[in-house]
Length: 107
Image 1 (tube, rainbow, N blue to C red):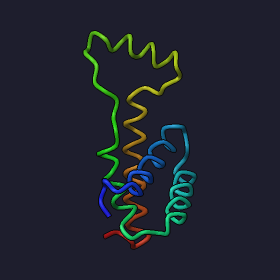
Image 2 (image 1 turned 120 degrees about the vertical axis):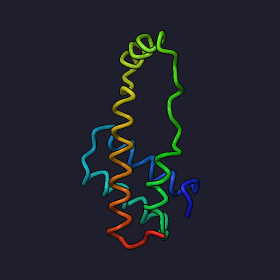
Image 3 (image 1 turned 30 degrees about the vertical axis):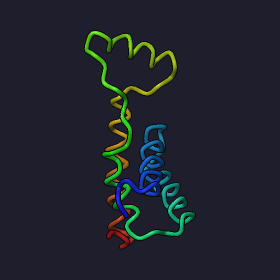
Image 4 (image 1 turned 90 degrees about the horizontal axis):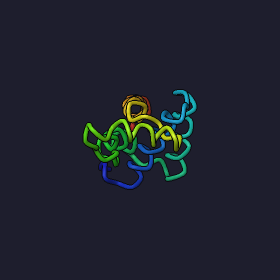
């Protein structure tokens, strides 16, 4: 399985979003494992999902002069700061790598 596989990207998105919205490691792992089981426990899925974190869509960059306005709009709409998204992505990748090692299904 590759990082561009829809299953890998789905697992990566689920893990990242789980952390972004305040889930703890156990809850995010439970949710990701449940999705993996629903799609048939494909070999290499966690490893591919960990790699897929790097290819998930990111927010477009804005010029420095527009960043304060962007932060105000994000707060107004309840969007997490980009730092929270990045921390969630790192936590998701770490979890998915650990799951790949522990399940013995990394390819």
